[in-house]
Image 1 (cartoon, rainbow, N blue to C red):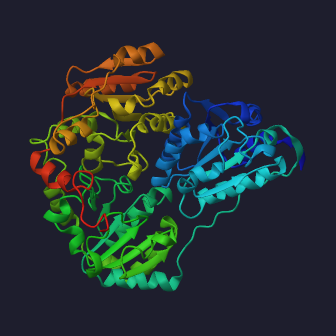
Image 2: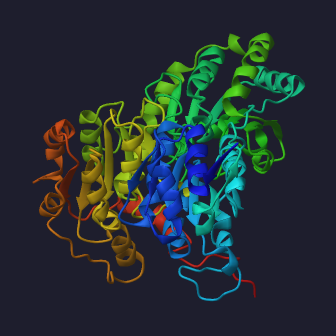
Image 3: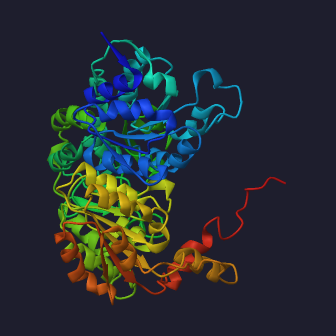
Length: 562
């Protein structure tokens, strides 16, 4: 017990949880918090140029480090600005603590027009946060921080919110600091594990479907051991990419095609349709289980609301991915599930059918993607923007290290990738970090070049520039009778980067990236590579087959009741 301000209590509580950096924008309602962080050894603050970047950076930090990221903003408009990053973190089950200021205590809820006032502020982000708490006195701070981190470290990790009025940050009181809450990983009962092992052992064509929950649980090594012990091949969701090395002989790769549909492997090779047992690990099955009721779904998920949502023929295993795999393995060995022959040849044949190389000659995106693959170190973290290259990367970019493939999930928002990559680089400054983005998305948060230069966040950003919102332009032209207002006016991106003190490079041809990327990675500075690129069409057969069926291009039956 000691006397301290709420800001000091907050900073000391964050330090006790292992926090080393806070991404924030200082402002009048959070002065006490900023002073507390300033005076706390071991914690530093990275100030961004816009609140939107605070949560994106915290998300990037969390996803490559496996530890919660922390953001700080003023109330009201500050929190609204940061909400898009919360939505992205929510969609990717990323642990982000949002610390937001509040208006003075006596004004809360009275609608008096206080600076930055928003009635029921926490409700504004209710649907993109797992837990929320308002802290009104310094002595309440440690418990709130402790519970926030417990929420992020147990169950399904998602963003949480603590809001604090300005008086709380500066008032002094007797405060009892708390140790971090103990965290116990959930494991299904032995009976449930034995039943699951029996079903798997008796199956003829089992398949593991791994999602983003594998990374959130640090279960990548356990997944590889499971596959190798049982000779069961692995398919990953888009969010699960990197859960198992793509080059592993038992890994098919990701199941998503650039169009967001189930990958052609499901039609050409029938992997999931043929499976009589599908072992889902940390996945929502957002596209459903293609094998359906014809298979038994062994569903391992820490979120119990996801266990039986997919299909009725399910063996639900409510548990943490890593702990459940480790507990399941002995039962699988005892049940004889490890006696099946290796499917490596079949996996190799299936991968040739969907191949990473089968689109080179007919789609212009692939040779460029292959060039990036060849020159970016395999251990590098890459943040993919909402671009055609990001779509293709889900299936065609090989990932061999965990927590190195980062995209926006179903949030699918422009502008997230550059600040998210900055956060990833802050988390692991010795690891190469590359951002692949279009010019439309880059300019959303391009002012964060200032942040990169100020703090020496030396990542490489590849900007594919076609001076338009290219995918939207294509869809409008193909399906709505003509493009409209999708063209963009960009600065000279090389000069733009250099004005901030970063390094600017320009490719005369996209294939120049073969030399430019290694050069950029060798620089001790943030680097922006401007890659002018023309209109990239999807093959017309694919375009008509896939895009023309999507609900944003044609009316769908049953959407409007008569």
